[in-house]
Length: 98
Image (cartoon, rainbow, N blue to C red; front, side):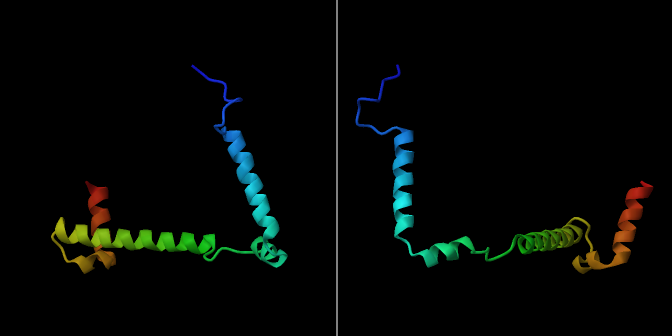
Protein backbone atom coordinates (compact mmCIF):
# COMPACT_ATOMS: atom_id res chain seq x y z
CA UNK A 1 0.00 0.00 0.00
CA UNK A 2 1.22 3.48 -0.83
CA UNK A 3 0.69 6.04 1.86
CA UNK A 4 0.32 9.72 1.26
CA UNK A 5 3.32 11.51 2.74
CA UNK A 6 1.94 15.00 2.36
CA UNK A 7 0.80 15.15 5.97
CA UNK A 8 3.75 13.33 7.49
CA UNK A 9 6.99 14.75 8.79
CA UNK A 10 9.12 12.41 6.68
CA UNK A 11 10.94 14.23 3.88
CA UNK A 12 10.57 13.06 0.32
CA UNK A 13 13.44 12.86 -2.16
CA UNK A 14 12.36 16.11 -3.75
CA UNK A 15 12.32 17.90 -0.41
CA UNK A 16 15.77 16.54 0.45
CA UNK A 17 17.16 17.67 -2.92
CA UNK A 18 15.71 21.15 -2.51
CA UNK A 19 17.12 21.36 1.01
CA UNK A 20 20.60 20.25 -0.15
CA UNK A 21 20.55 22.70 -3.06
CA UNK A 22 19.60 25.51 -0.70
CA UNK A 23 22.46 24.54 1.64
CA UNK A 24 24.94 24.42 -1.24
CA UNK A 25 23.76 27.78 -2.53
CA UNK A 26 24.21 29.28 0.93
CA UNK A 27 27.75 27.93 1.22
CA UNK A 28 28.70 29.28 -2.21
CA UNK A 29 27.49 32.73 -1.30
CA UNK A 30 29.74 32.72 1.77
CA UNK A 31 32.92 31.88 -0.21
CA UNK A 32 35.07 34.78 -1.37
CA UNK A 33 34.79 35.69 -5.04
CA UNK A 34 38.48 35.06 -5.60
CA UNK A 35 38.12 31.48 -4.48
CA UNK A 36 35.14 30.96 -6.78
CA UNK A 37 37.16 32.28 -9.73
CA UNK A 38 40.01 29.96 -8.86
CA UNK A 39 37.65 26.99 -8.98
CA UNK A 40 36.38 28.04 -12.40
CA UNK A 41 39.87 27.92 -13.90
CA UNK A 42 41.24 24.91 -12.06
CA UNK A 43 42.77 22.20 -14.19
CA UNK A 44 43.45 18.54 -13.69
CA UNK A 45 46.61 17.56 -11.91
CA UNK A 46 47.36 14.83 -14.44
CA UNK A 47 45.95 15.46 -17.93
CA UNK A 48 43.96 12.72 -19.64
CA UNK A 49 46.59 12.19 -22.36
CA UNK A 50 49.24 11.52 -19.73
CA UNK A 51 46.92 9.09 -17.97
CA UNK A 52 46.35 7.20 -21.22
CA UNK A 53 50.08 7.03 -21.89
CA UNK A 54 50.71 5.70 -18.39
CA UNK A 55 48.04 3.02 -18.82
CA UNK A 56 49.45 2.07 -22.24
CA UNK A 57 52.95 1.82 -20.78
CA UNK A 58 51.70 -0.38 -17.92
CA UNK A 59 49.90 -2.66 -20.41
CA UNK A 60 53.09 -3.08 -22.47
CA UNK A 61 55.14 -3.80 -19.35
CA UNK A 62 52.58 -6.37 -18.19
CA UNK A 63 52.63 -8.08 -21.61
CA UNK A 64 56.42 -8.27 -21.65
CA UNK A 65 56.58 -9.65 -18.11
CA UNK A 66 53.83 -12.16 -18.91
CA UNK A 67 55.64 -13.28 -22.05
CA UNK A 68 58.89 -13.68 -20.13
CA UNK A 69 57.25 -15.72 -17.38
CA UNK A 70 55.30 -17.84 -19.85
CA UNK A 71 58.29 -18.50 -22.11
CA UNK A 72 60.51 -19.38 -19.17
CA UNK A 73 58.05 -21.66 -17.36
CA UNK A 74 55.91 -23.19 -20.11
CA UNK A 75 58.40 -22.98 -22.97
CA UNK A 76 61.40 -24.07 -20.95
CA UNK A 77 63.54 -21.31 -22.41
CA UNK A 78 65.50 -18.42 -21.03
CA UNK A 79 63.33 -15.51 -19.88
CA UNK A 80 65.48 -12.86 -21.59
CA UNK A 81 65.19 -14.68 -24.93
CA UNK A 82 61.69 -13.23 -25.25
CA UNK A 83 63.24 -9.86 -26.01
CA UNK A 84 65.20 -11.21 -29.01
CA UNK A 85 63.80 -10.97 -32.54
CA UNK A 86 64.93 -14.50 -33.44
CA UNK A 87 62.66 -15.99 -30.78
CA UNK A 88 59.59 -14.22 -32.18
CA UNK A 89 60.50 -15.27 -35.72
CA UNK A 90 60.62 -18.92 -34.61
CA UNK A 91 57.30 -18.54 -32.78
CA UNK A 92 55.52 -16.94 -35.75
CA UNK A 93 56.99 -19.55 -38.12
CA UNK A 94 55.70 -22.25 -35.81
CA UNK A 95 52.19 -20.74 -35.84
CA UNK A 96 52.01 -20.19 -39.58
CA UNK A 97 53.48 -23.54 -40.68
CA UNK A 98 51.35 -25.69 -38.35
